[in-house]
Amino acid sequence: MLTGRISFSASVICFWLVISGARADALEHMEGNATASEKPIRQSQSLCAGEQEYVHKRKQVVLESLNNLGVNCTDTDSVPHITFLGSGGGQRAAVALVGSLYQMKQDGLLDTLLYMGGVSGSTWSMTSLYSDPQWSDNMDQAVSRLSGPGVELEEALAWLDERSKEEHFSLTDIWGVMTSAGIMNQLDLRRLSDEASRNATNPYPVYSAIEKHCFTDGPIEGKWFEMSPHEAGFTELGVFVETSLLGSRFESGELLEVKPEMDMVKLQGVLGCALAHEETAREFIPPWLDGNHNSAAEEYLRMFNVLDKLIAMIKGTIQDPRALSDLDKLQKILQDKVNQNKTELLESKSSEERKTLFKQWSLELVVAVEIWSRSLEDGPFKTHVSLLTKQIIPLVLKWEWGTTGNFLYQYQDSSIPQCLSSKERFHLVDAGLLINVGYPSFLGDKRDIDLIIAPESSAGNMFETLTLARDYAATLKKPFPEIGEEILEDREWPNDCYVFEGKEKEPTIVYMPLFNRRNCKDAEEFKAKMEEFSTFQRPFNQEKIEFLLETAKTNMKNNKETLLREINKAALRRQNKSHQDASVCKLKSVVTQ
Image 1 (cartoon, rainbow, N blue to C red):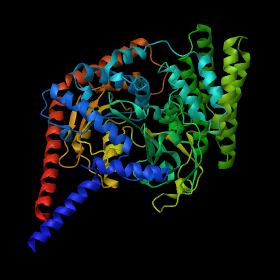
Image 2 (cartoon, rainbow, N blue to C red; image 1 turned 60 degrees about the horizontal axis):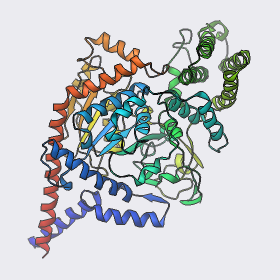
Image 3 (cartoon, one colour; image 1 turned 90 degrees about the vertical axis):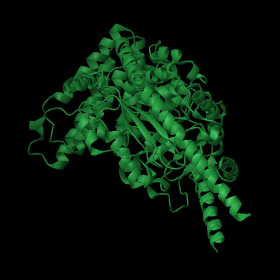
Image 4 (cartoon, rainbow, N blue to C red; image 1 turned 45 degrees about the vertical axis):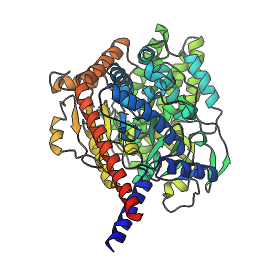
């Protein structure tokens, strides 16, 4: 009787281990292949076969790296699952990510990474890094590319002209080409799925976005969207398509028409378009509207903000002093219009009358751009501006971002929320609007992460990405390390490194604020540095880029021993897991004989 219970218990435990994906690579590989051959949409909480294969190969690289560091690791089963998560934060985050990785390479730590995840600004650098199949061995080139020759406006316009012929042309295309050309200094025309056949030289990349309508009105399970070289889909719902099919036409789970996969330029626009959300209207509020603005006012401010930021991006593609001066004049024209006190015009007006006024003022901003454009001196710059305004203005008025063919349209499954299944298109935008670090893709059993290295380059409240991720995990009942409320007392002037230790299933998080007590003498300097390197501004000059690179490198260098200690702990933890799993299955084998 006792034997029967032991046998049953051991069987259940081993079965749980298999379905959780802890030690079932071969079984999942078979399952993934079978699913892929039967249906274009894969519905599962396990890794797809392609990612499993890549991770298996990458573990060989990690194993060798750990042994070189003196970390006791005997085989790939005992290799800890370590991920590096880049935060949002525009160009500040993009540059800091490269600096952090450069120093990790110098310290022999880069090849300990199994995964790399990014949101928003950090994805700009990720897409640039992965344009080199051997980037982990070429970090000097990655650094030099940040300061390299930019992309000419003419080349960016040629790319836009081609995209404008496509069905899903939106402001995302504009933002993508401007960040690619003006900040990352390259137009990368490859596709994410092109990386699916690469060797395991680099950590496996996972990019994150959110679905705009579900973010606003849907359940939490429909918000987070991830993309890798093999699959794209909703993390919590566990529904995915091959990345090459993202944007194709689907209905009721059937593939109706294959459309071209977006290139990395557009992908940068999808992943890093914080302007897409209404919250951006609150970034700048003129004094006359402060505390007295409504939805109509926000649309007006949103119009100003997107025009102002796009002008700043265009400056990054231009060298001609005369053209730069003309763009400065346009920015001042728009700023003067928004700052002009119109309080008296709003007094004693009804809600509808106010709405009409704000729409009129929004159109006045557009008219101001067109008048400025016509006033330019004849020449190539005027021609380029004319083409650009022709592309931008209709899209700004329409305010459409991240339009993508919805592979879940009319998909028949009760787990799929209506905000996804009811529309032929969905809208993928910047994940930083939900959580400015890509924790959701790396929580739980699917990737079974032991250690997260999280340099923090976000603006806003320090530790907010951690508390938001903690609350997200709690809602979905996923393990997350404890974040004590007392830590929030450091918000105005944080330390350079914090370790939030996972106890059992929770990953350990090494959290490293970019600006901190070691590089800022007090809270005032910390605040000043965040303002100096604010998210939305003209592309950084060489001096600012070098300062950020050195700051990120120094942070990593200063905390090398902490990282090594936590890597050692992660390896020990993974070995214990491996031994426990083996013991349970051995017990099952003995009992059932």
